[in-house]
Image 1 (tube, rainbow, N blue to C red):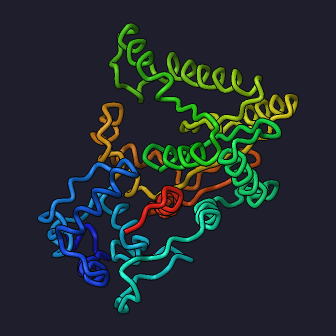
Image 2 (image 1 turned 90 degrees about the vertical axis):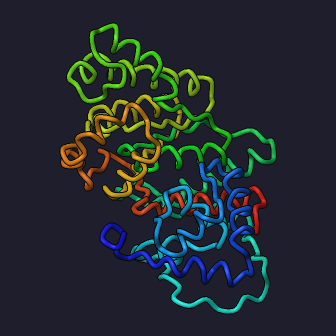
Length: 338
């Protein structure tokens, strides 16, 4: 474990548990409550928690996210990893608590904190304006009011980068439909590949790239226009690697949106290689099998400096930092606590 997670400090989990006076069994119960709220896949029995605290078992992604919600700390503060630039440093010692209950922040503050991970990727976009647009949509959504005009948000990123988590968060806030490429097309894509003589879960061959992939994205974009033409905003969730790399494609999309008075926001979710690998391995999707089997080759093809052509925003989800803020905001919005 020390070689794979050299910055891990498992004793901090015990320190935080004892700070609020929880037993291992109590901790497991609260982690399961958090898991139910957030859809995390964890058993959270006391033996597993003990293993985490003793350092014999490194917590997986959903466990770490649940611990962050339970103790109201980020992963760096809980000793899972080093802090990112600008992120709060690990808490080496835990002060005596004033109360066993932590006060939840205000909902608007939690939402804005989660959206603070959106930053300008180019000089011709305004992250504060986008945040305000999302917050205003959230306010109207919760109040049952109508929106002013349609917005389309394209959320792209490599597999395992956290783009779907961020897209779902935006959708939950605004009430805008989420159009996920895989959800829309996967069953048909699998059957089409087989009918063309390929394998159902292939996503790397020339057959897929030339015959199938263009149809996937055509379906996604047509579904988006069906909504936008009716004045309904939409959030598109897909890698968009090829599309974002083509300035002509991006310009055509911007022009068509402008002609229909549709506001556009392109978001690239960046992440580090190890975090992407961990999440891909954790979710265990059949379509990712080839990535895991040839990981070194696949990883060499990832351009961590990739950015979309044209105006865009960037969400920094290295080491899961942005998704952690999303989890915090969801907890606040649901009224979750200890």
